[in-house]
Image (cartoon, rainbow, N blue to C red; front, side, top):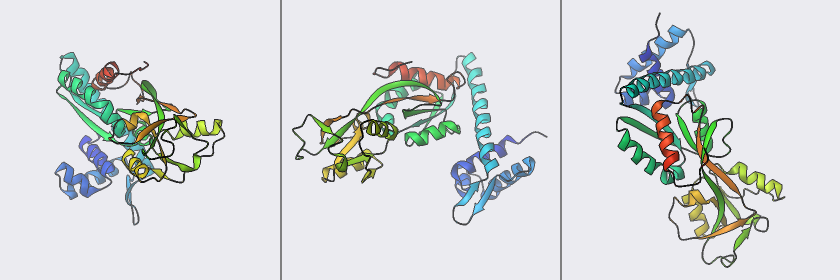
Length: 294
């Protein structure tokens, strides 16, 4: 018997939405039809792909998670076949799924997208935003074809785009406004952290300099951090790259000790990505106005 690929694609959509209702709504297919497709696939494979939990709702089984990764690989290979064929005919098309954190979406992607779309108008780009850790997970399970993340990049193949560093932000009436830099050890109790993929870099520097990492206040976005600092709740610590993507009127200070990180592109293998993804990466690396490393 040959596997019904339509059933497999409907399973992928239900797994993405974790809802038969949401999947049917997005695909303009009736709920019974979606449920039947998933049931038929389970019957064909003789396994259970989903379970219903009273507290968490629809959940993938362990084998369902494995099948989902393989299904995405199959979809990626199918996409690559069409792209290779179209490339031979000098007509690149298909779809690229890009994972990116918001600051990278603001600072890096617009120029790359403009150049790429001008050259390859038939290729569709789907952007999925999240934190660096989320994007690494999406690359791992092949939810996206490539990710733009903050270091560390291992165990993935990577191309570096930018060397970033952390800065402190304070309001103009702060008692450190005349200081050249903020000493993190001296002011460790006043620090507000913004999560953004630089946690490993911070913890290493703090450990090496005998600074106690006190997470008395930690926020999830640059906008929230700026609001907290404006209200005199502490000294904000944020990456310069991320800060450059939002508007503010705060004073930016160097910090001591210095904390650096890198921003780059990750994927399972640059040799195995689709032709469209490869072209997208090449354009991004060549057009990004920074000191990148191949």
